Image: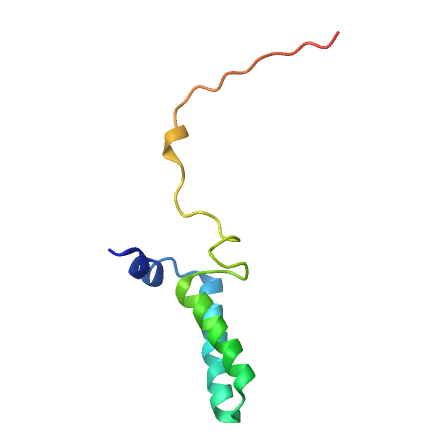
Length: 84
């Protein structure tokens, strides 16, 4: 699956659904009230929902989806430091 389609169709959590609902509601209200500013805000929320980004953009606030498996199973070495 393409990375864009994977981003759009997977990982739907509560906050993403909330952004989608707020964006859709704001766009409908903007159309009904003929208000451009509410339309921009609604578009911003819809963009965040579809691309799964937070307020920082480029998922700077998001937790990574995949864990780094290269560190799994490695022995951790400790060195004891004595204080005199």
